[in-house]
Image (cartoon, rainbow, N blue to C red; front, side, top):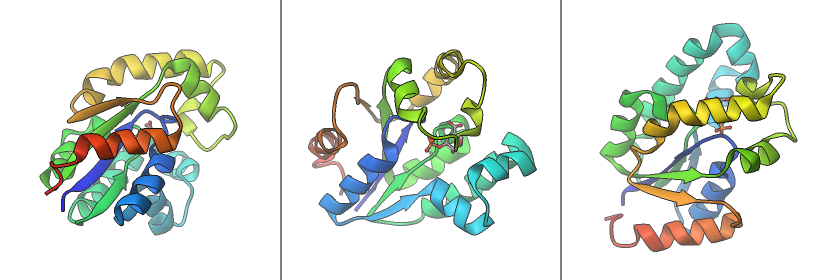
Length: 170
Ligand code: S3P
């Protein structure tokens, strides 16, 4: 069976929705950021500090390449994974690519309770979220299916995804 790949900005619920989806479908859950942290023995923040964003992106691409080889998996990716065409090509080979969306205000709310996202550690995170969303819009739109998460619980989002991918996973 094809993989379900979750893309989308930080705070759109990829990790939680991925967890629910994998349970409901009996799929393996593969979270790219978690694999990166385990393999590197560092947090994402530490990796950004040590190697910078380009270094992190190289590590991310290598992990995504390997995760893309799996089958029957829900693959949850970091919010910037869509920026490299190579990642999208690898993920698409054996997967349906879903993109979760939310408004900048909702993203701010969902991300403001922790400091593990180096790109949002700035004086005006809302402004930064808006800028990044604007820049990344065409990249997120490369997904096969877009799902708006605004006002929905992760369970509702997971159910909507299951409904939409039914029939195209084989
Ligand atoms: C990033 C998103 C993060 C993580 C890193 C960079 C981004 O993942 O990969 O901090 O560029 O949007 P989440 O989307 O899971 O927070």
